[in-house]
Image (tube, rainbow over all chains, first blue to last red; front, side):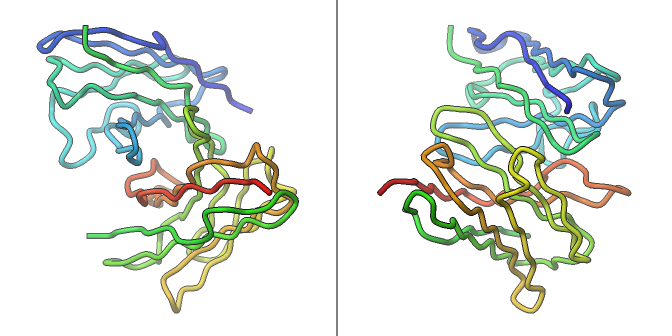
Length: 106
Length: 120
């Protein structure tokens, strides 16, 4: 089965910062990767699918890149609403989520 | 706009069967994959399984022996049964939709989640 790792596990940042979160798959998943944002007590929200496609309604400050085993989620200018936990998820073979990256206030 | 709503008991006894239903409103069940995903308190997300609108299913190998997902198109609902539960099955259970991109795509619509505790 495909394992997903994320780094860092926690990231402290300020409003306006450029933020980058990394995700790695244990084997190639082509571009079958999604990114989700989750806030406490809420369901995850889809941000990015197929590695770099922006879900409708998601602000353009979110972007995704990568293919194969290495992927990145970038927030170009962190906004107050962006403090949350971010998960990557592969859907090349079944579905596996990464352990999450918590973005908190510096 | 499609909405998903989970329903079912919030408390299940050990060794019994956890049963949940997801009601799909504002859209059709057709041409989508319908999944169950869970999240233990303070932990990450685990996919449980999906059912395609045709009725075909696919389950997480780690849970396959205990899981059944079924579909009721007349009620626009799909259901989860997880048998022989233990405390390790305590989690928030989400239902979610994936588009059909010649296979399931990412989960673009989620229910709000329902907390299920396993305890005597």
